[in-house]
Image (tube, rainbow, N blue to C red; front, side):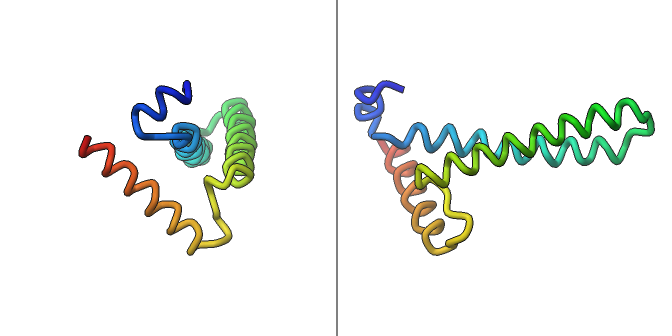
Length: 99
């Protein structure tokens, strides 16, 4: 998103973080859904196809996680840092809602 528009909306550089977080949540859901689908199917060919999709979803999740960690958007190994980040993001969202 254009930085001028981000600043006008009061979001600054936060848009990339919001998009990445949404993508990460979707990737996690995909991993869960593929795993569940594999347990529900009896066709060997379909199981193989779903396993391939599951592996792709896991790889995507890893790439998003690494990106977010490199950008400082995600701190999975430091809960206090993650809590502070989450509180900051929540405060920004509440401030945007009030505008």
